[in-house]
Image 1 (spheres, one colour):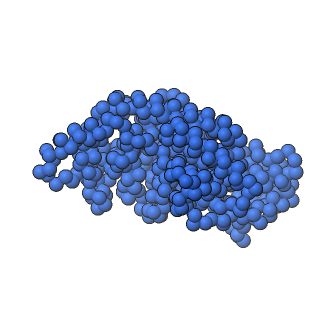
Image 2 (cartoon, helix red, strand yellow):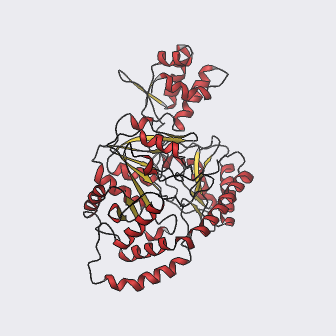
Length: 471
């Protein structure tokens, strides 16, 4: 990270008081919040002093303090690198039951209960099942009926698609894992957002990928670091980004997709496409990437209908779909037939399901924002433009410590570092708005009480190594 770029990151946060103190606070904050990622090499002290218009002694003093705190590491002959203090623990927020008498309120899952129509559609699918029993029941690319339904939906959105450009998976995360298996060899560069859904990170790490972050903040998507070295594969969520709830406008999508090399396969995750709140209507992401990378779409039944179905899909060029199907044959062979029939029936009747679910989600989103304003006025959350969760800024507090304390108040919540590659973003916490209104407001009251009980502050537990399951 050169001096001019670091200057742009640090300048707004450098206080008007003692310059060394202001630089320490700004650089520490930038590292904790993920604007300067652990592992980045920082400019030499003289170079940074020139860029910031400070004396070298001021920068030296700031670097020395941050080395002592564990936020910088200097290696002889190599330079100075950003770091996070090694204060990790093996604690997981779902390891122990809450101490409250009632069952814990679960804010780790951003998924809705099944719609009432599902039972009727499942019964119809079961009645149709005998017609499939004479065969093996194995179709690595998925049932033709479901592939046709999914392809038709893309065509209706303005992305002409045929069934041979669709592969059915066991959910969106399975789709991502199959793409990793097909496209990325161990050690390959894979780009992904920072922050992002934890399962996306875990899958890439399991495949021993070298992760290059695409920073997502209030100003949008910043692919610069991911574009420095060509990535073979990328994962982006433009529609209801998880966890921030942002919704990228068309111009933003064009800019980000154009930043990738033509050899990159970009997986655009549309899991939350059906839950657009305040965002403008956008075009299918792949239509905006014609001149750049190969863009595929990942979809799922989990968010729009029911996560218990475990049905998703990949939409992409037929040769890539064929390659993914071949990879899948060495893993699980095929998605279950009955669940695919149910999925086809639900998608065909989506007009009977989605309007009511959107209205329910919109109401609960407002309940969450109102409850935060009343019970947690020091916290801040931009109203999410899409999706099923809000990304809440604790105003300097630690979400790792909050998650630890919250379980004693009967609430489970996933801390911000779990959504990052390097364990940053500890001042944020993701709060879904899928619980019924009364439970949701009760959960926020309990979180507020947990925050109060954290005073005076106990030693912080960092969640960089936290592998808590979350959805």
